[in-house]
Amino acid sequence: MLPMDALSSALAVLTAMITPAVLMSACGTMILSTSTRLGRVVDRVRSLSDRLEEIAHSTEEVELLSERRAVIFNQLDKLTSRARLLQRCMTVFYIALGTFVLTSVSIGVVAATGGANYNWVPVVFALLGACFLFYGSILLIFEARLALSTIHAEMDFIWRLSQHLAPAELVEKHRPRRIHFRRHQAP
Image 1 (cartoon, rainbow, N blue to C red):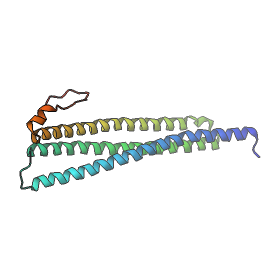
Image 2: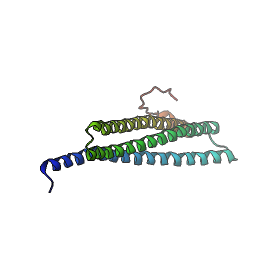
Image 3: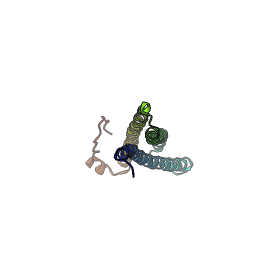
Image 4: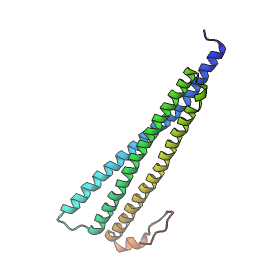
């Protein structure tokens, strides 16, 4: 049986090792979420690419053809930027995950070796991991804003197309409702 001091010391080490485990779980959640977002971007790129090819090979007249092409091109450009941001986010989250694993291991090593002079090592790794997690979160904010701008651009085009295709009396009756933080010109 362990003496009381040894038991409380062992419990303190195990308790200290649990904190990085919680942050590892947070990193895993962020990785999963980011991976899902990246998959959706890839699916959207494939869809727009197919639509662009259909328009290019179509012999029938398409409403607002040049504007459709421009919208698709702009969407593909923004989706490329989003995919790159999401890939960078995933890399940063994996680095954070590895850093938190290293934090947990270093806590165990410092405790097992009795290296009182090296108590700062796990703290440095934990802070580094937290910085990576924070940086990845900031990147996701930029990606979310970019995603929102693509939605706004697509909805603006759909509104213009519906005005072009709908009967004039219906267009006069309905005006777009804009709830944006930036100013738009009236269509």
